Each structure stands twice: as structure tokens, then as C-alpha cells.
Length: 88
Image (cartoon, rainbow, N blue to C red; front, top):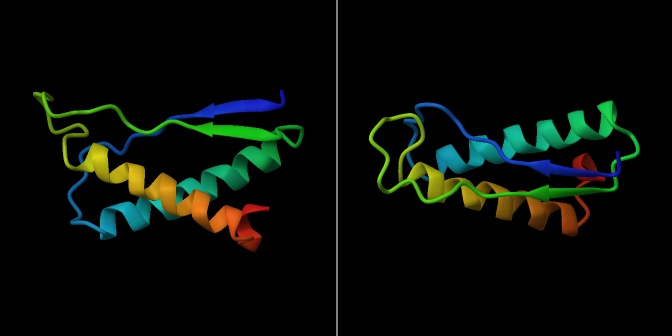
């Protein structure tokens, strides 16, 4: 396997912004490292952001948390492109 698709959701989030997004960023970085360790041939990981959850009828992953998760992905990609050692 050389390509992976990554989509993650946090069930019942409660932390405010930006704490929620920073926590998700840290979790995403750990998952990326797990992917690299478990699947050493992976060369590309597509990060999918959460879909709009404005019409959610449960607290599973409502807005604004689904939207804020996009910041976690953005910040992680920015760190990776700037040469962060944990995301080689």
C-alpha cells in the first residue's frame, strides 16, 4: 500500500477553540506516525476534513467542532511542510 485516505472524527467533543483543534492536531500527528510505522511503504496520505454537521441531530460531532477539525489538518500540514521532525 502506497496511498492512504485519512478521515477521523472525535465523538462528543466539548473543548473550546482552539484547544479542541490543537488536541486533534496532536492526535492526527500520532496517527500519521502510526501509519508510517505500520505501513512503511505509504508515500502519500490524503487528509479528508469532516463534512458540514450543521444539521446534526446528535452531539456525536456537531458544529463548530466538525469545522474546527479542519484547522487541525491545516496546522499539521503546515508543520509537515515546514520540516517538523515528527512528520518526516
